[in-house]
Length: 390
Ligand code: ZDR
Picture (tube, rainbow, N blue to C red):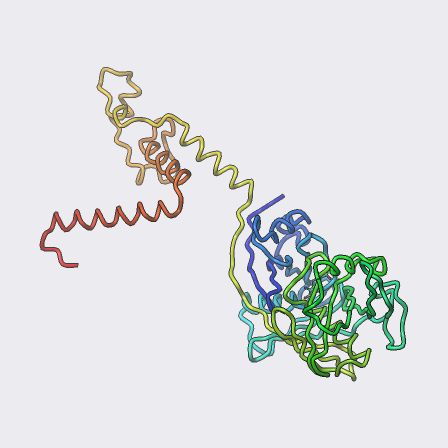
């Protein structure tokens, strides 16, 4: 069942999401009647709002402050989303008026994740320790000399040396000499659906600029090429450091901008710093309510509206009509709780005209009508009161 859907659009490095607050919903996991089809429709950039995913803020289920669920643009549900959880933190802070230093314990399908609001407004996320065992990713690649799943994969006739890591969700990392030269549309979907990744995978091509500066491009599971991928940047740093190709702390440039990633040697956890910005809020009305409003508007237009003449009928006409005519109903004062004579409502014609006008006139034309009306009223006032000084 649908209902009105209030949402907030947020983005982190151009990875954009619809954030929904279901923290007080009576049946949170059924909130807003979300289905995979509805998510895909909402995320459609032409037929919907547009986004790389939909994120729900929910009551906790494992002792945290809140729980996060995320749906990809194709309606599938991944375990975690790095950019998304930064957006969630910003969303919660904006809703609840929290400031820098605030941290949240967030339950996700990838376990407990802890975002923190930094003084400059960006968000640091304790993403937890990476998953480096093949069955945890999951992948059929075996542990190699670098201590994580590694191997050579053939894709569309070409062979690539790859490594895999999990951040709750699966990632394959492919070091290349020139990331710009990779045909993402060609290789991305083939890696995503490669049999070595039974739950499909996010795909990252990465080039080393220096030991603490990498540049990467992303093909996301369930979303295609995106401008950024938080979990992907973390998995990439972990894989590249394990392969001896970068430091434990590095800047990772994504098409949407840079993320700072640190794989802490002591705790084994990965920390991600990056931006999260509010874009706009909106409400999608319940489709059933819209259909009903349109049905009512159409009925109002079709109904024979009483003509002014019929409201001033001569006393010779039927008594009831004459009574109605005699009774000068002032809709504004008499009908405050609804029309008292719907069958002979004196304002029905006016409302029908307005409904017809709204239905059949573009927004531009309505603005023109309003402008012309204001102009002519102002002119009329000048003519009535020639000395008027505005
Ligand atoms: C990559 C991602 N946007 C992030 O920032 O971590 C997560 C989205 C989920 C991803 N598409 C998946 O694992 O299916």
